[in-house]
Image: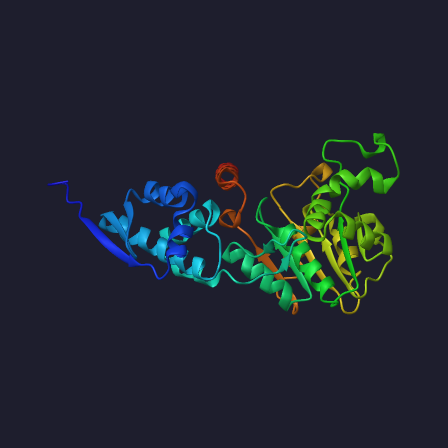
Length: 333
């Protein structure tokens, strides 16, 4: 490196417990390999010290990410590719310390004993907003946990007897299929569209408990058309895929709110399937309800995507494409 002007340095990070180091390195050192590749550094464990060596700036950023991950490990979090990559993105923005806010906040336990927790700062803000407000509107790309975390909050409220019912609904917009040609009544026709909701409920309650609660009327999963004319008291109500509501449907839904109830509205405004370029009720609601007390609007970004890292890249690529398209159209105008 002589004459290149690049400074090589080494920093040490003290590790309190060996199990934190095991957690940090991951299976077959997969976590450390991600960090080394990302920053072009070498990370070696010597005794109770982690030695990070490479270019000065890269070492500083790698150390910030490692320190944040160790703080997560100290809270009992299992470190994996998702939170390692999230730590990297925060470190690159100079916000690695923010990661210490995560961990320890368990929303509920699944039927298999797995704790459900917010995995990003955006998710944590969302969870806190639901606890604090009567109505929360969440807008963001696929994979940000909008629906799953809302269902987890609903199950937690139901288990704590804060509500008597969980009601989950979504508009039955025909995404390329004609519902009229499908067999069965309206409920049976829209059940395939409600599948992600069922999956989340099965995960949290177990299939048997879900069936029992559904039979008793404690859990209702139904198309939006079934909400008309009702007042929903003592309920946790979730409207999913809300980008596909019309303004009239959205107003109808929001005015179903009864006493001792909570509402969460979720949607992705980049995936509107409404026919004839009709205006989305979700976009209108975000404008109309802004600043209304006891209602909070939460907006997720691609940084909150907790699926495979490629999903995050896909979302980012589409965002960039849409931005370029808007700029081109604006230039024509």
